[in-house]
Structures are given as structure tokens and as C-alpha cells.
Image (cartoon, rainbow, N blue to C red; front, side, top):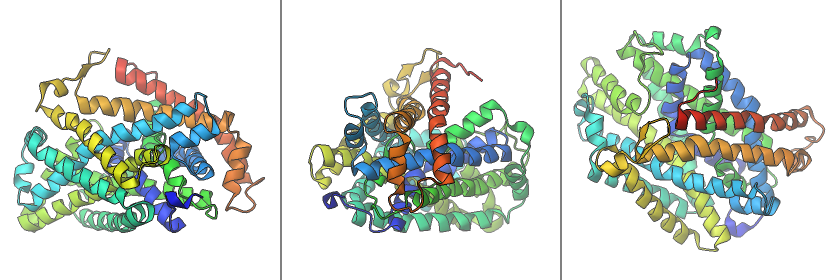
Length: 471
């Protein structure tokens, strides 16, 4: 291991940092929305199965490639598959991390901005209809909030692997879990929360359809941040003494657990205000967090007082900010690691330069909510859908390029690097792995992954660009 690059101080440090990479806004609001829209508990059941059957082997593969090469995604694939189509997977991963961060940090800025607004006494205003539209259309406030979030992200990444990323992951991840559990306990005491709990935990297996399976697999794949090289980058700092299987399993469990806990919080909270909510009437997208939940907290003011309701709302948006920060750190680390390794630029200078460029690109997403007509009506898809700049970047680099990267990664492991080389790397740090039932299962599933992920990619491209759904 090249010590100049840095290394996690312990397996626990790696687990928290890798889990932080996976845990983010997709867990806190994406998973509850997908659950509500796809049959409630039946979706949760399918999601958990696919997370461990399909996604867990991809997690193992990314970590193994990173540790084997001790390089960023570009360097890793250039070493293992030079001048091949698979080398493109590394470049695609870095580009995805770079571009995803450019819009992710804007949404994170909205969350942090709502925290500031609530703390300053603005909960009642935020709960009014149309206020979210007014908030995101204000370019000056949002540039400030986005800039502050980007500054915090760069500051942590500049600190390096141990003193920056790992140290903050050790603080943020346990804090996130404690805050989430505290809010869940409180929400469960509210009237009608039980209706939401039943919707979330009692499955109706007749709801399981091909679109539900596709949505569950997409959510599991995106939730774990697979395909952008984040786990390859994290794996490149892992010691040869560490057990990849055990660490990767814990990361997968933590990621899915936070998603499940977020569902336990948000879905019952929705039912406390709207007990007649159904999968057809629930509001998807940012509106769930920025429009509906302020109304939930404001509704509580009649029972607990405006001050305590504001405290709970601030607590919630601070929780979301922590979740977002754990992800923005890992997203910035992907291109930073590439610049440090391949261009031989010092970490501090690399992180600052990349952070500045990302902030400049992020300005387009800040202006895409009405402040600029050019960025608000950025492109029209072949289907006729009009897309703003933020939605366009999210569709291309998050919805489409991530599964493409995951397909190339799993195809590489199965057909270029070969499963016996993957097994040899996983066996380092785990005795008796070679020849075990676990090895046979992982080797079998890794051949299925390219087919399954390719289906997600094709289905997503057709749905997003042409409004065509295969199933």
C-alpha cells in the first residue's frame, strides 16, 4: 500500500466512511417515496432481497478492485484493463461523481437553507403553499447556501483520508443514527402514525410486479452509490489485513438500515397529517421534504407549541444535512483522488480546484428553478419533456450513467478480470474463502449482474428520453 496516499486507521473507519458515501438524500427521502409509490411493504421486501442478492456482490467487486490496485477508478482500470472498453468505466465513474456533486450540493444547500430558515423562526412561512418555489427561485440565497455546503465538503476532503474523511465520518454517522432514532420515537407517539406503520410493514404481495421489481433494484443500486467509483476509491485505502466480505456486508446493512429507518420516520409522519394517504395520492420528489414536511411540523405546533415544533423541524433538516454531507464528501473524494494519483497534484490544491469548478457548474442548477430562463428550460427530450439544467444533469449522470458504470464494472469482473482473480483478492484477509459456499455464490451472481444491470440501464434510457417503458 502506498502510504503517501493515506490509509484508513481501522476497518471501522473504512466502514463508516464507505457507509457515509452510500447514505444520503436518496435514503432519507428517495427510499420512502419509492416505497409509497410501489406498494409499501411489498416494495421493501423486494428491495431487501435485491440489495443482498444483486448489489452486495457489486459492492464486493468495487472494494476488491480498489484494494487490489490501490488506485482511483481511472488508475485501477488502466492497470487491470489498459486500452480496453473497460478503461472507460473508470473515467465514467470519475465524471459521474464530479457531475452528480454539481447538482447534489445544490439540493444539499436547499436542505441546509431550510435548517437556517427554521432556526431563524421561519417554519410558519415555509409551511405555506408555494413557499418552496419562492425559496429555490432566489438565486442569491441559494448560491450562498450551496457555497457554504461546498466549502464544508472541500474543507473535510482537504484534511485527507484519516484526519479529514474518516474523522468526520466517525462523528457524522453515529450522530445521524441517533437523530433519526430520536425523531422516529417521537413520530410514533402521534395520532394516525399507526396507519403509516401498517402501510410500511404489512406487505400485500399482490403489489409485486415487474415495474416494482425494477424500481426496487434501481433504488438499491443507486442507494449504494454503485457505478461511480466511490467504493473503488474507498477500497483503495483499505489495508490488506481487512476482511472485504465482512466490511462490505456491514456497509450494505448500514445503508439499507438507514433507508428503512427513514421510511419509519417519513411515512408515518405523512399519515399523521393526511391519514387517508394512498400510493396514488402521495406527492413525489422534493415536495415531500420541502413542502409536505414543514406542514407536518407546523401541524404539531397546536399540540406542542410553535417553539418545540420549530425545534423538531430544525432537528430534522439538520439530520438531512448530515446525511447529505457524508455523501458530498465521498463524491468529491472520487475526482480528488484521481487528480492526486494521476496528475501528482497535492491534495489541498486538488480538492480546492475541483471544488471551485464544481461550484461554477452548480450555478447552472441554482439558476434552474426560475431565476434563469435558459437554465430553467435547458433542453427538450425526444419525448417532448421540457427539462431544466438540474434535472438534465441528474437524468444523464445519476439515472443513466450510474447503471452503465455498474454494467461495465460487473462485466469487467466476470469476463475480463475473471472470478478467480476476484476471489484471490477477497481471500486476502479472509481465511478459508477459496472453495467456500460463499465464494461459489458470489461467483455465480457476478455473472448475472451484467444482464440485470444492463436491463436497468436500457429501461431507464428509454423511459427518461422517449417515455417508453418495456415492462
